[in-house]
Image 1 (cartoon, rainbow, N blue to C red):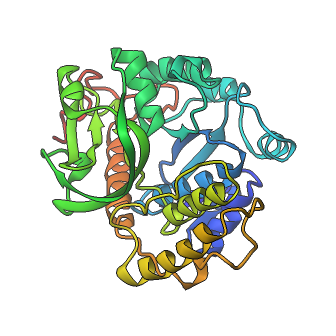
Image 2: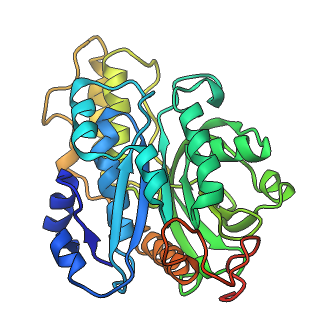
Amino acid sequence: MPIVANTALPSFERFQKEGGDVLTPGQAHSQKSRELHIGLMNNMPDAALEPTERQFLRLIGGSNRVEQLFVYPFSPAEITRGDWAREHIARHYFEFEALKTTGLDALVVSGANPISVTLPEESFWTPLCSVLDWASVQVTSTLCACLATHAALLYFHGIERQPLPAKRWGVFSHRVSQDHPLVRSINSSFDVPHSRWNEIAPAQMTKAGLRVLVESDVAGVHLATSADGFRFVFFQGHPEYDHNSLLKEYKREVNRYVAGEIDDYPPYPDHYFSGKDRRLLDAYAEVVKSQRTRQATLAAGEFPENDLRVDNTWRDAGRMVFNNWLGAVCQVTDHDRGKPFKKGVNPKYPLAQIF
């Protein structure tokens, strides 16, 4: 599906340079097709603001090419931002109140960087709950990513996430656990990255009536839906991650060790680095540990990032899920953006006609 560059958001241009299909508003309005209008609630901190835009643009833009896609990023004003991020949001993002007036066909809610002990203490909690309340009535389908999934399940179902004994970090094999339009034409087994300290277990989800569609014996649930099968879609994994996202997280933790912010040298993300990469990183770790007295962040070029060859083994599956999701939205949403479903669709079981 082509994405319409409806603002001067720099990520549109970068996505186009990567080979993404991007139209100007003039090109879009000259074509006779039913476009989709998709909100992107970006709750990530400043450093991850633009990468998160691009990661979800890739998944959305990698969907089928039948419809045009308008994407509307917005972010809660309650999140503390630096000068650059505030200017970026002011120039390129939309106001949620305005989007409520015009309507959305679909909504993606990103994860966030937790800084408080409980989710209701986070600065994004109140505006997020307001968005979820509105979306539950007015949006055809809302997709929640990682921490947004934990927040939504706490808010709607009272499900408390459970702390893990160690960070669930790496790339894990998953299996499709039941048939559903979201996982049609997808491999029955595929990889998904995870990066989190907490989880909501399969039993917690099924007890609340949710449908678990994709899970791992090791990493737990990746993909689930609300009881109706579609109004809310929940990710615990990160199919939007770039091939080097986990690498950058690992490098950040190594730099924290060097700076004395953490006491233990970070473990490797599971099932991510090859044997050759681990040997390079092992040698590097020995040097770093022997020079622990250094307080400054590592000099540029010392970390062997450019010598590592990490793979992306999850993007195709992630694109297919997004393709199926947006395809289903197309089939059941009303032509009027202010109405979530066309005539004849039962909101309590929106996919009844196609599943």
